[in-house]
Length: 132
Image (cartoon, rainbow, N blue to C red; front, side, top):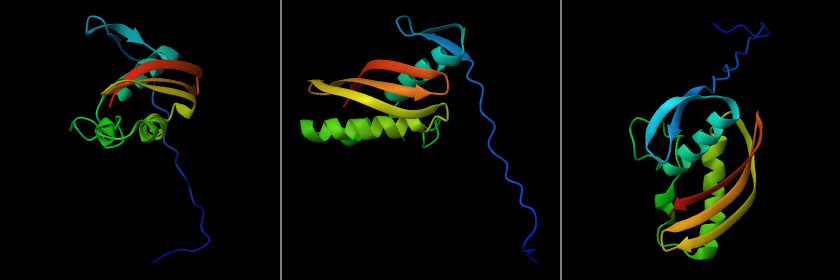
């Protein structure tokens, strides 16, 4: 039986804390913790280095689909990298927009990517290289 006109309660998902382990990218070791803007910056780099759908430990919403870019033209790569980076990062509820892209193909399987991630903590300027 369905009641029409009743009160509906909508529960929103609680924001997840951003505190996480700090990764030292040079040594590959974990040392201490980070929070806020630093934690989000680390999460962005991690998402862009993780191939989407390749690891069972991550949900299907996590990672960057670099394998889709193999063998594509430079013009296609620039537009597709922007779309895939945006899609990968907007899965994180702390990120509200990804803008100001600068993409240059630096090698046969590598691209330099610069962009601004707009987040609940403020704007983060990101410069990274992605494997394509």
